[in-house]
Image (cartoon, rainbow, N blue to C red; front, top):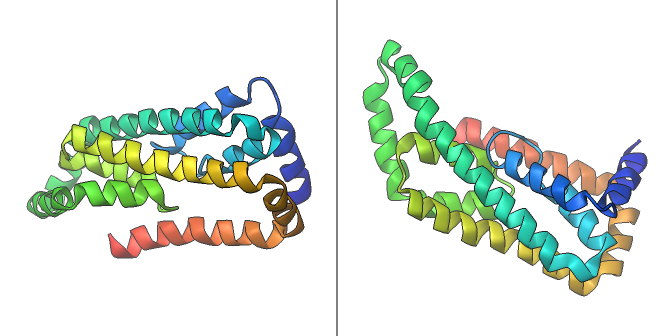
Length: 193
């Protein structure tokens, strides 16, 4: 089944509308969707290495715009939904302390989440909820997401066929590592937040 999914993704990566699909996945992943855009970015670059940097650029722009949407969710919906819940439980003061601590390290938190497998959407929403300076948020997002996607695309551009052979040979274990990393990110949020 995993092999069929891989083959389907590789087929999708070569289609004319693949960039639009990548943009959509990148956008929603930054605000609400749990699956990172790398699942389409990597096969797209492997299928069309000459377009690697265009693909990374589309992924970056859509991801940063999705991050801005996540920021808006945190900013606007937190006041409407989150704050009244905190008031009911008497935790509004605790949130103010959290927001202050978050904003002191905000640039690094956004940068770290944008560059790593850590669920970026959590940081985008928290950035809006805590009122992190929007310009700081956007700069950190552009640097981190662009760095992440352009590094991946650059490595695939330079070493495409050997990496493709490696992925195809070790697809099962690589998938397990991906799932462990994804779940680990959510577990880290649960216990470190």
